[in-house]
Length: 192
Image 1: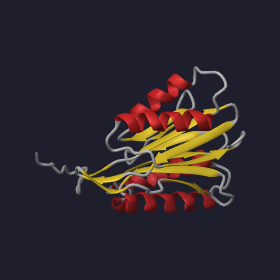
Image 2: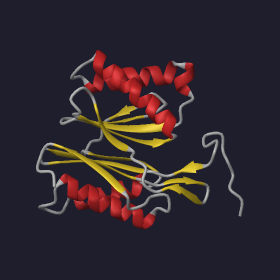
Image 3: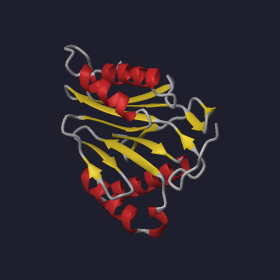
């Protein structure tokens, strides 16, 4: 069986599940560590979720080409410096640049960003999307993690962090491009 490379996936890289969950004043963002090339796992412990911003009070996770994602993270941090305390404005400004700048337009990545109040998905199409229910996911296992998190939100007593951990486990059980090496960052609430 041969692996076909598409123009939107020039080297055949796959992987990543990034999930963000909000509940009871806590925000949890989780990402798995698998990087795959075709049918081969290249690395199992990549760190695709991190804290950014001048006070490390913003969570960011990325799916796609690593170099592209780091370029976008740097650009977002510059926007956050320009618009302090205005995550939505910084995201919109980045999305405008991403959509219109010739260099940025070629970047193959997606991002989730969240602060204590809001979460956003950013894409190269110029999208800045805020979820209705406080749960958002991207990447190859994103829909599995999103479905699991939505189901787990109906369970009383689970924190955002616990929902994120359990949802990532479920995504890893289903998606061959998602593993169990999870990086999880939280804001607010009781972090364990």
